[in-house]
Length: 168
Image (cartoon, rainbow, N blue to C red; front, side, top):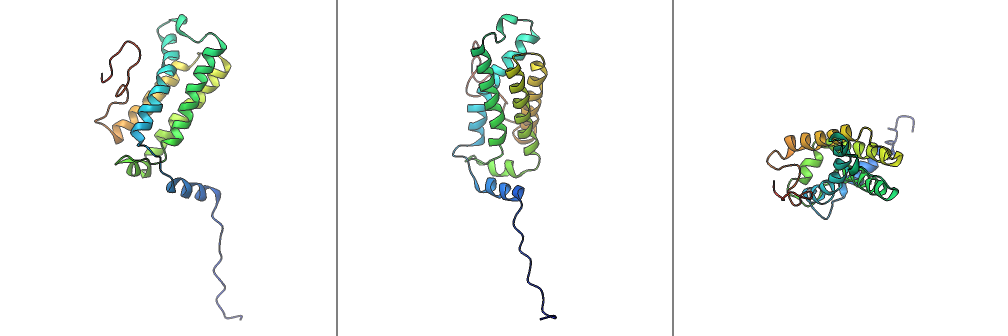
């Protein structure tokens, strides 16, 4: 017994490894492009509007009522969740390749981080800093597109803000 090889230790996987394995096993029922166009684009436009109203000195376009601010919060929540959802591959032909590339996660995390900061501002009912946060969101989206999808624009593929035509 003293000369026998000790049994191999079995170690329970840590929480981070278990979470990574669970995410790796998941797949969205739609492509990441659909998520970006259907959720990210639609959530970002109203958030950009808050910052742009400040940037262009149009206070009449800033949220005024509790209901207005709840709408801003709603879109910020969408942005927060979108950054996490974008880390799960979908049905698109490049989705698994994109999400497994170590450069992908920081871009998706930036979307979540900006959404979280926008949510804090909306809950405080302040537009201060929304311009800069909008710029950070643009940087994350455009940075990702430059690396992963340089031929595809970051906005206005399937919809356009009021007064514009889609596809511009």
